[in-house]
Image 1 (cartoon, rainbow, N blue to C red):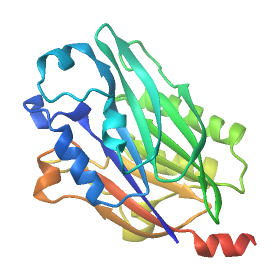
Image 2 (image 1 turned 45 degrees about the horizontal axis):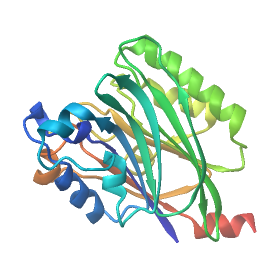
Image 3 (image 1 turned 120 degrees about the vertical axis):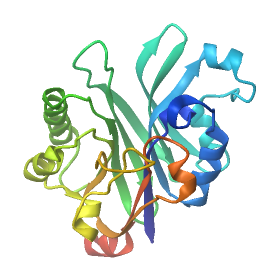
Length: 254
């Protein structure tokens, strides 16, 4: 049995340059990846202004619209709230989410951030903790958030339970890999399988390695950067996938 995780900053459902609303195209594209779990950043939970102006705006939240008929379980962490609505991170899952919590990780009033932590029950394996994050733009703030993240993991997650931390790290200096490795014993999926982080931003000509998938307590089987012309034309970030083997780990525990 394998678990496929997709991490994707969807840019609130608008394409590069915010010219077109392309949430339907994002929906069909991520469905085709056949991901078991999806970690999304910059997801609009509600926006009255867009809803009144855009003809094909979904009647439900963006995460419910994207999850529809593919991922039966989902969690949303509301981070940034304003007069017309709010946005944050979302986790979509084909396996039951038995609990979730969104921890405030904001360091200033302009960048409202959170750690969306879901506990997912995988049949014939056990629980997997998934934390979906979107860190600040400035390095000092990111380091503060990463230390807070490490404290959360040490406080709430037993060392013998599987953990995945995915999202938009905004970490062009690649500091997170060192800190999460030293503090939590985590590996980054693309470094593990290909020897280097995936270049995901900007999508039209990716230079920066901003999007990551870190893990422990699992075996990474494969990784993939989705950089075909379709994904280059959607969000300003490219999505990444990591696939994990579960049966071998489960047999080792039994």
